[in-house]
Length: 360
Image (cartoon, rainbow, N blue to C red; front, side):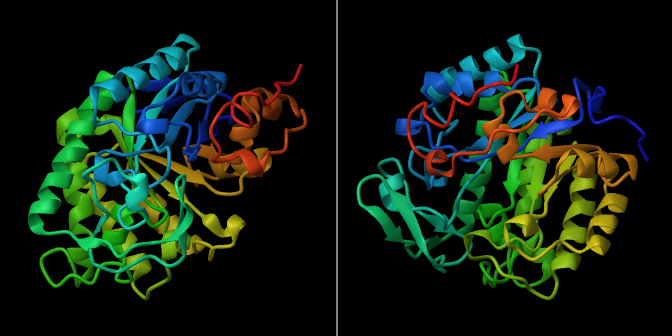
């Protein structure tokens, strides 16, 4: 149990963070051609007073960039662009991890680089539509089910991108195992209906996530790797299944053995998803030996309570950081927060991105 203040320095493996606040990963779609624009460096540098920044979801491969203007980390141009981001954050005393978001079936061919394709554990289309710059909203396509060769290639792409992220100056990487994207698609029987060694039982469905996590940890060191999880999440067509708690407890125990530094557990109930049961949160807390980050509907009082009661080591804020570059100072001194402009969450350009005012 910790008695640290939200605003006191915190430890994350070998890193000393300036406080216990984390800027949660948030998709912003400001990278035309899948390469971050200069305003991306400005955006993250403005928020460098966070103890830790976790970037928006970044594609570890051409197949993984399912959204329009989603950045990647698989080319020299992308590495160079991200280096300007990490330099800007570090110059202001911040720390920053890159989130790897392979979108899996949550993509569209119009959003992918030439020659890339929409892949997933099974050939099951996601419900709903995907925005494209060329043709507006389009139905999600049926993905191609990944072969074992695809699994190996994709795992190797995660590893190569992890090395690229470290070369670009990132302090570490976060695997996106949440929100209905590729890694969570393997965990759930809703999206994983394979009959090989990667589908069927709980043990088989967690296998691929563990293989990717172990490979990335082996490549760059487990102290530089975290993973985000969203049990009971509803994004991307995910729905509840009977063995959710069993799945996440088994996964977390095996991830601990793999040496990852943190798990980042998000509860989306504030956005309409089913709540993550307190019993599961407590079990995950008990099962995880290192840093636990929690996220989902926190304000200052709730965040401080989570720390004081030992339910978390760090607390992540999403939209409040989006709209308040100086969120840490505003929370510490009780100043009012800017309201986020929902209309500019995913639009190109600086409006609603780097023009939110700071408080005096």
